Length: 186
Length: 353
View 1 (spheres, chains in turn green, red):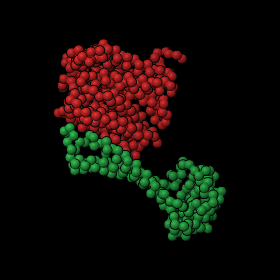
View 2: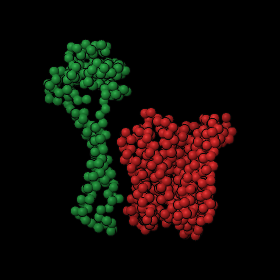
View 3: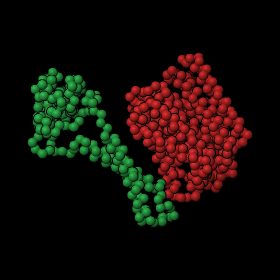
View 4: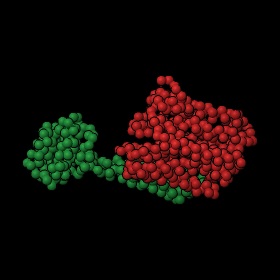
């Protein structure tokens, strides 16, 4: 999910949980309460969390397909071009010899499918980046060990700091933190 | 136990299969060169138990959802081996009608290897080894050691017998990848049959995508091996091997060649898309297309080199249908046996308790 731009008054409110089940349950209750823009962080993939968040993006597989088609066309076209531009008779084989062209076509198809997938994944995640507003929260590093975090973004149409904080308290989290925007360039 | 009505239907299926096979052999007896059609049908349907044995061996080494979905069916299908062995008998009896080296005595370099008695011995040894392997697997269940050793032995003997049954039809044709290419056809055939059985029985909830992925893998393997053999022969450009492909791209066989390619590459492209991979209807259609493609491919491997002509095509059609019905009724009979105990009684007699 796209994170809020710096124009929102606050980046968001973050609730910390110590059980993966509590995280999934809380996502469900937040969505029931009408919140739309939120994200979750966990040390390992939590089953059901993506579904609960309503995450169903499939840009990466399509990018992979596009990369594959682009690479295959590039590989084939490159060989057609070089053979036509520099014609050499090799044992009487046709200038445009399709069977051996397939090897380079295949290699470049795989190369570009993988490159598109990796670069696309990084770009969709806004990576690499040096800093993230969530890093200002003191306990957030525990998202890499044993804590589970739910953030309701500040640009959610229903977001109102005091009220949203009260709602998060009903989920009985370990703690709640307000997350501000970073001042440094990201 | 099995309902009497169903048992009757299975028996009728088997009987119809037997009649079709008898008709095919009748035609072949009148025109011996038409036996090539029988060879094509035999090799295609032998691919089912042979491929199932290969998959069953792999399932014992590679756990996962595919094992839960397909293991019982693979174990049943590999027990069809005796039926394939029986279908090999007409081929072994009439070797000179099929193989030029058997008719003329072969060239100097084939004098020892390509002789009728040695060929027959190898086929018998192949079926003996695979059958023993299948029975050991049925008795011992999931033994990793047996499966690992069995898989090594299996690949060696299966690629050897592929050279015998198919490559030696043209003693001048050499391709070192041929055995693996045939193995990929057998594995795809068996997988398509297992998938059809599994999917017709009902949708496997969330695991349909895994089954689609399996079919995609089998077809990709086939495409790789089929293309590599072609590519290497194309690059070598040696007369004997090129002639082998030229005969198979001649006249109407050119159309068959295109159909084989389309029925292989089409499903591969479609299976790239998750909605297709996860849909029961699509998978049934694509597994069916795979079976049709592999049937055509086996005919394309056997018939263009033979002198059988139209009678051979008729024999192939009759025998494909007949052996297919026999295999189907055999599968139904094995599947109707509830549990391993019954399977043992059916196929091994009263073995160990």
